[in-house]
Figure 1 (cartoon, rainbow, N blue to C red):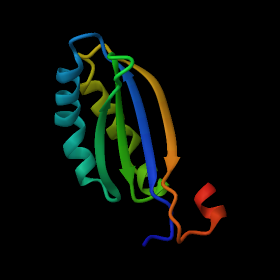
Figure 2 (cartoon, rainbow, N blue to C red; figure 1 turned 120 degrees about the vertical axis):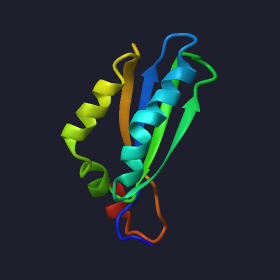
Figure 3 (tube, rainbow, N blue to C red; figure 1 turned 45 degrees about the vertical axis):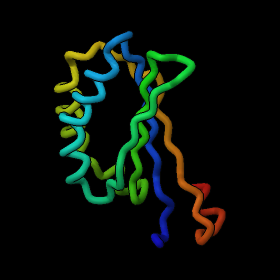
Length: 110
């Protein structure tokens, strides 16, 4: 078990009707290889909102917040530019930590 809590990156995009599949496939093609090469990247899930069909949630798991924040910003900007054909809007970007019973409470909260 790591001595740092697992970091969760939650991105929520508004994708025009009928565009979800293409957006998800493009995201995997553009971002997938880069993320899998990044130390500390644990995986990604795609969640589709059943109440608002235009929302696509990307849930990324990182070994730690430090691993997540070590992703080079210039690489992220270049990857985002490759996503430009999709007219989507980032609705929300949030950060969570996975609670782990073995960590002291103050570490899990920071």
